[in-house]
Image (cartoon, rainbow, N blue to C red; front, side, top):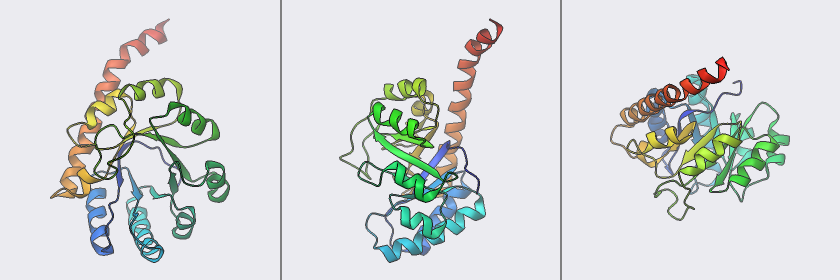
Length: 227
């Protein structure tokens, strides 16, 4: 798959040991309009991770949606993933780019640190992620990022910005309006009674708020073009 733009609903898989269940939930999320899938399983051993990642990679390929592996460069290479997402304690960006090549997606967690994001952009990262913006079930001890960080990052970065941390259909809109290109969601999506319906709702909310963002910014762009 060619390197795709990072926007919309970015789904992060939960720690599920039953691969069939994980694949079924992910398929419903894809049917609901997810733009990217990130495989993240902190509790699985290497054998289970490989089995699950390979299954999800094939599923995403069928939907023509990018498949990203969290942390593990070796695993991403082994299953033919479209890229990796790296945290602060993972391999450096330069190593990931060297091993994955120029066509793969590499995202960087930047927490609440704009300088880290600027450095990632300078090195050639494909997107940066800030958060947690809200209390996170997945990462309850995550650093808190202020909403204003998105606007500052938008002014200084030329790569997509992903917001993460406690995101639901109730708060995703303000993050998109605040400057995020994508929102990363795990618990509110995969713990929903109907995963597909939850994905559809959040995806629709994202599109509505992107439309509002364009509408509100278009007059200034029009004036700029005139002058």
